Image 1 (cartoon, rainbow, N blue to C red):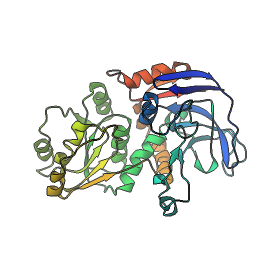
Image 2 (image 1 turned 30 degrees about the vertical axis):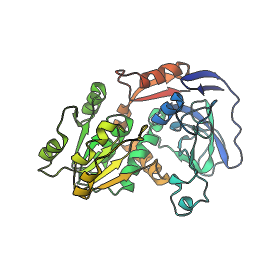
Image 3 (image 1 turned 180 degrees about the vertical axis):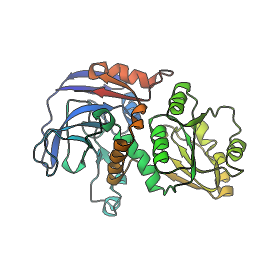
Image 4 (image 1 turned 135 degrees about the vertical axis):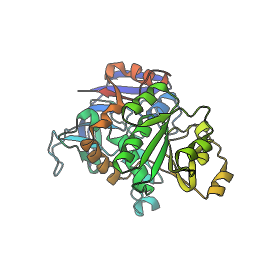
Length: 336
């Protein structure tokens, strides 16, 4: 079968490899679409602590079930896959928190993932897609699940307002999910003009934060209070510098982005405001199921997908996301 292989830092190949043979408790999925995410970019750069070459990357993908022994899911059904690999035995797993398992693994990192014509996955991780969900949109369920988890896990309340830093895939997924969850107002901040324009076309107000006096700006927009919820979907120091300026007294800051470098925070401001500073990681299985329902009901999520390329253009796909000014947000490969 054809696969995109991570061969080492900044090195990809597209070549034939053996079709996987699922072990007991696993099943075979014929991949249709698979997306590049930030983790894949870290692997490509050679900075991921666990991923080892040669590796088939990607943990966000869709396809059709190839195996014919799955109760309730006939062979040929459109599916996506919950990609977490939890041990089931550690304290987090035993207390219902397998998504933060002490030895958490993922498809596409700790074993081969979706950048291939076929992938072997745990049977229990297979999630059917509604008939109205395209395979392209089905491959976006994973980042939408991150957004769903962010709001469900941290107790977002309908009617609250929100500020989002970053108009990348996760920022836009959070914004659209906030809209579905009943946010009274969503403001986004982004420095990249193309990404900002995409968010505007999706109906969001976007402001460039460069040069803003953040605290006075946010208070002016919120009757002197600051925002109920501030979501960091950017993961860079200039955003960390102003998170505590943007949030209201006893408000909520949620760090969704994975910081690639250590960051500093003016923590005394958090003390003065008695604010929450919270973090989220991936998603629960229920979040994945909810995300699949959301994308079925709201086709606007498809606007996040800017490029779909054949596997033979693997290098182009990664170049789009590692070069400034391309306007790329979600880049996928198609194996159909």
